[in-house]
Length: 453
Image (cartoon, rainbow, N blue to C red):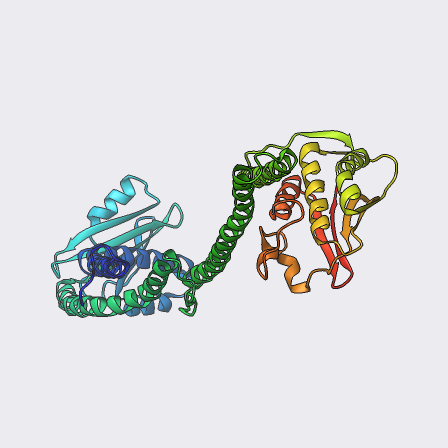
């Protein structure tokens, strides 16, 4: 039964034993040390209550006073104008109620009530005398003996010694099993948490301890494990796909540079063509790095929003004009359906990023007709829709498309334009604006991305 220092089992066990010892100490104080004081206090309250009953019945039922005196083993004396009109001295052994010392004190000080503690010379025991005035001429005296408690205390002490030893032994045994019962599920959780720290996600935290807080902790850790596993998978995919996107332009840059060096010294036109490829691929690398930096900056909340009023229609028209090269060289069609002017308040540069990335996404995935449709309309809120005519997205994939490089989980595809993390940037920017956004898609009919201002 070896316990590590400062472990949970040891602490719970220790505190249970301390609690048991405190209860035993409490019993010793009140059952042995303070028993005389408590007995005297109880007896005083008893004769006070009896005195109140006597004051109600002293002049109507004398037999009641005799019966009360015998049953409660007390001496009663009722005095009127300092003359005794009832006394139970003859029926109770050891009464000292006829002692005039305390009576004179009560009379001379004109007291309303008073308790006296005297030594009974007849029995050599302590006695309590309680005096209470009913009116100016009626006073009741009640005398009760305080029985010696030495034998009782001795019996209680011996009994408590035995009880204390048994309880302490039981507290050690029961306390150990209780502490193990509580600490065992936590120790199991700790062992599995170590596996989690080492990147092992192939297990579940047990949540059947019947202790609410421990079960709640297990549920929370299961959720954290699930999220960490997803994050780790995303990290691996991100590294693989960023590496792919870096490798392709780097390979092309290296290849065309070697061609310039080895083959095109005298062919200026071919050399310029190769240099243009190098420049385009370098630009693609630059865009990739900038997108990663932009996303990191936004997600770290270091990129503050600068909101202003601007014409959303004009912004989108200007953006589409910049894609004229895709119209002229690759036959892309951009269809815009909107009114003349819609003024909104948002961070103009970031909304521009959103629209750019959604159009880039549509270019990458539109159908063979190369058609991209942009709808802007007002229905309670201002809604922007960017639609492609591609293959569409499976229903089970829709919740994941905002993740970086999610499209590449089946098969990586080199983008026509952009870097593959555009939708993640879109999500982060729209979240920072608290704008509603989403995606609607049907297989074979294309996909519509939207956001509302």
